[in-house]
Image 1 (cartoon, rainbow, N blue to C red):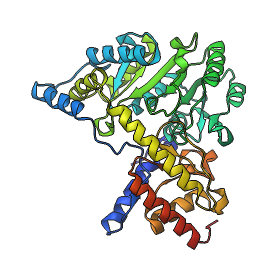
Image 2: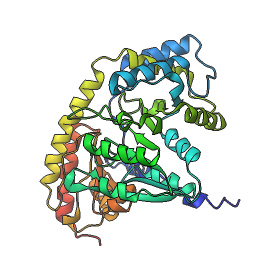
Image 3: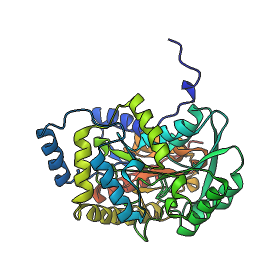
Length: 391
């Protein structure tokens, strides 16, 4: 069967590939500490689970509107006003099975072959994958480690030209945990507004923030009608397997994104959407407690990584990832990630899984217990002390 010419341009998400390799080692009787996958290790709060059960018991088994249930879209609009100070209407919201379709649909709707898309590098690999798949031109903007992995704002602004069709931002950032400061978001917003360029703002980690308050580019004057906010329930409410995300965008674009949904997924599962309403409206202390525990783990793993010979790690301000510099070990990123999995039983990701500027780094998710993180740190220190670098 001959594939289309565009299929080889489609990338992947390495975290799932490493997870498969780690599971294969576990099937052989090996103990593996999982620091590779980007999902909270907490269970979904019980009040959300019970809401889903009630929805199923009451017959929420059928199709819903492609854009999402009106009552969930209303709850999302209310949440946007409460948390971002942005007033939107349900018609600005499209609910999707997970937040990733918002990346997929936005690029499908806005990017033609040859169009340029500006995005962070290292960054979530699906950005670059989809730009390439559609025949667009990726324009990566480097993150600056010395400034806490903040986007090179001057470089971004200089990259804008008449072929730029979209800017992608992500804050807090995967894989580094970096946060774009408010003044930098303002500067990017002013440049985007001046040139009339839409921004896809990936804010999936906006609630997992350890200092300050989240500031969305949609809050910049003139940017609400040019911004697509990506958010969802997976990270904030530990609902990765529920597949429930959404986008907030101009109404005219929302109509087109809903058409893409009709042509692909039809709609998002009704019972998960009803649970999502409860998640937003009946939230207790669960999110705050989870973030506090992530902060405790963050401090622990950063201190531990900085004690390993050849590694250095800046303190992330959000999300649940660290992105240590490993150039002092003498290893390249991919060989070291493979070695730590095979020899130390520690699953992590090569920095190059997030783009070419990720060489010289590894990504660890600290969505695991302090006990396991401590064991992983000790195993890595021992393995590095015993090994010769693979160049």
